[in-house]
Image (cartoon, helix red, strand yellow):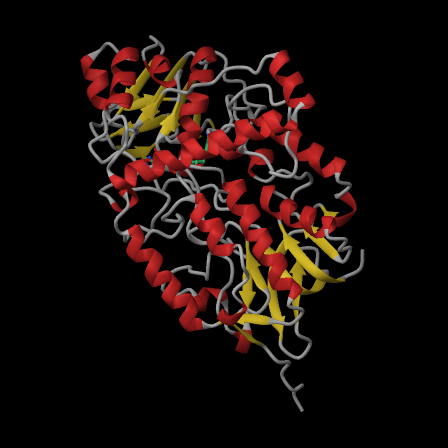
Length: 485
Ligand code: NAP
């Protein structure tokens, strides 16, 4: 594996690996996947908190080209998803193309050479004709700016940096935040903690989790008849898309709000607790969560839900807006991620030495979520406005990878025309303004000013159709600059 390749890929999560797998399937050998960690898996390597799992059914939340008849449950848990990813890497013999412990610190387009120069934290570098960033949208943990946070004397960690060496048995545990991560681990921690105090800033809409194990007979059938497994996948996909279409058209067959409200009423008898858990914003504004054990956990005698704003932290614990100190031995931050950057701290420089930070001074945007004007042969996977609230991101990633392969097949450095990128973004921002995400709530999908940077406005299929054919006419060829005299 040399230091010069056709394609360099940043990240060995679902997206970066998909790019590598597809290149390999085409017979390409000149590519490298640069991964900062010592193991593949991306978000599924990082999030090891108890109860971690995916809320998209596994037969859909997997590569279309690597179906898995052995998914243990409808919604599989993190260890099973990580094992799946590692299994695919092994089966497709991708490891020789993966460099672990290779952290990309920056990359610059070398105009004379017509290549990306990619710098690594160890001081080495890689050059490549094309650079594919598969950075993820949820990999930079965000800690809350609470006064006195640093003074807390006990153990403290973020949900995505779970410290398994901290024994929670019998401890007083404070949890800050109640999003998709918290609602998965709170029930598990509540079982062992002496006391759990959950600080909620805003409640979520929560629907039942229709999970069940697959029987051995079903798994045997999936192994013997891949078409049966494909039918299950297609049905999950179809139902997800239809729910979105019905909601957008106002023709949802069942009114949506009664489902989560009935779920809350069935699981929480105390009217005061129910009131605290009832959202006051439109369903779908934040991600709708799925859980059967979160509400019951909150009714345990050792669990308290605090809805007063957090005033500050002290060495002893968390002080709420009423001035009450909630003493804690351990604080767990389930406060989400820095989600609006798409390349984190990675310094990228394109044509004319312009940094991505400068190109994005009004906020991240890309053409189809993949290419950025002024950055030739830079391709983003799971980039701006490609997240979904209703369907599998892996489906979106596969559409992006197919598009990138077509772009690479053009065999010349291409940069998307600025006016094409601008028109595309005007169009999707206009569509996004009519979605529930634009409603009156905070969420990781948008900036504090309310611009939705993360989500795609339509169906997953509409996105795949938009990327099915590489639109060469949207691009201009970038010619090598004359070397400086
Ligand atoms: P999140 O959805 O962004 O939730 C962060 C939580 O922290 C929210 O409750 C937020 O309150 C609260 N918070 C943030 N800053 C705070 C502050 N300064 N003071 C008090 N509270 C604060 O993060 P997440 O739960 O890690 O989930 C992120 C995304 O990851 C999910 O939406 C999902 O896409 C993915 N995920 C998926 C699964 C799954 O598939 N089951 C599991 C975990 C994560 P507000 O709501 O008031 O802002």
